[in-house]
Structures are given as structure tokens and as C-alpha cells.
Image (spheres, rainbow, N blue to C red):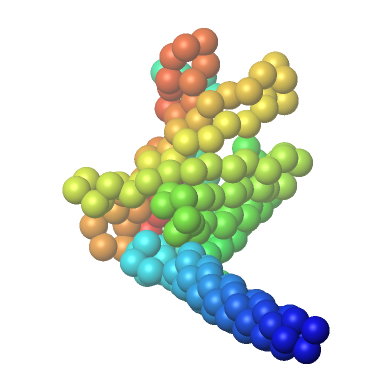
Length: 199
């Protein structure tokens, strides 16, 4: 009987030892997993070259805006003042537009950033001539030094979704040209051209 108790005690100690080692190994694995997760999150949150490229756009600009209500007609031309600044510790560039459009006071707010996770640019736009929010995603082509964004909005007259595309580039230092296109009836037409000159 005494021997049985001794064997039972040894078995219990052995089980406790194995359990402790298993728990220790599991805890170590959890710590390693957490460290790996933190590294991934850190990489996702750290600004990089795309954000530095956006930062080059910061400053005060004067914009000449040409809009075409009907293709082939003379464009309506207006001017805007644009202020751009990097925010959120170099992650997002925000821009505020002020001027006139169609003879009315105009204000617009835009934000553009780069998502390290999805590896694309994103942009939002809202203004005082609408009550909606426009969203875009895009890419930068280093070879042509161009940004291209695509998005859509709901036309207030037709209530139909209109696909949009914008292309922007800098032909020279301190100059930026952005052209906006819309697809209607299966045909893509240019509806706006903005020429920005840095002050």
C-alpha cells in the first residue's frame, strides 16, 4: 500500500512537471506571436516613401479650375486658393480649397494618404456644393510620374452611379495638373482640369 502511494505521488509530480513545461511553452509561443503581431502593426502604421512623396505637395497653391458641363463647349473657368499640410505625423495630407465656382463661393476639403496594408493610395473629398462624400483609391506610376485614382459618386439628377477617374502629374517643379474624367453612357469624357501653381 505504501508503495502505491509513492508511485501515485511520483506520477502526480511528473504530470505537474509536464503541465508546467507545456504551459511555459504555450506562454512563450504567445509572447512570440504577440511580438510578431506588433511588428506587423508597426510596419502597417509607419509612414514610408509614399507618404514622403505626398509631403512634397504641402504648401500654398493657386488653382485654375476648368469645368465642362457639356463636352465640346467652352469650359467655365474659376480660381481657387489651396492650402495643403501633412497631418497625423506625416501620414495624411489635408487640403482646403476656397474660391468661386459658377459664380458662387466655394469651399472644399480633401484628404489623401497611403495604406501600407493594401499598398494603394486613398483619397476623400467633400465640399459646400454637395452633401456627399467622394472616395477614391489609386496608384502612383514612377515611370510616368503620375497618380491615377478611380472612384464613383451618385449623380443628384439621375440618381445613377457615375464612375470617375483622375490623373495628375507635375510637368515641372511647383506645377501640378489634374484631369478628371467621368464615364457616361459607356463613354469617358473629361469634365475638369485643374492647374495648380505653388505660391
